[in-house]
Image (cartoon, rainbow, N blue to C red; front, side, top):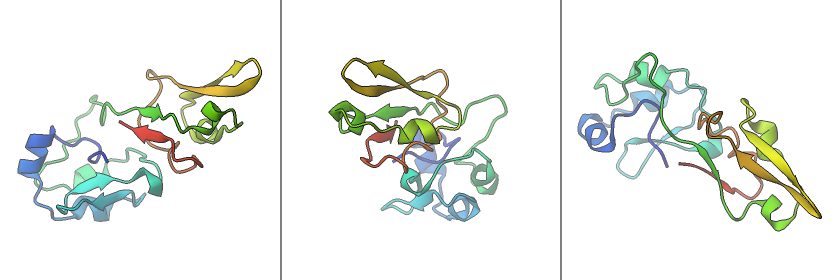
Length: 140
């Protein structure tokens, strides 16, 4: 699972993060959880990231560093092979949940419409993950 938005590169993040949990407590969406080493990760099964920045504001050691004009991360939605539409089952849960309409469905002859993620539009917020009945979406 990914680190919170605006996390430093992994080595720098690991060096800076004190495992205080302040970012976890600050997240109004409650999607930040502790990994096995008690460092924060994002659990998209709990919901989406709104990029409010409260986690970064709460991070005193600056392992999360929000910079204006810099995107929170380069993560994007990736649809896995267990997607229901890929098995010819009509499902548009991910597209319906996407706040920026980054997931569109292409019609296919004699088959369910297939989801396609626009990397240009996708923010990696994870809104598409929890609604997916097959848990076929990864944010990577």
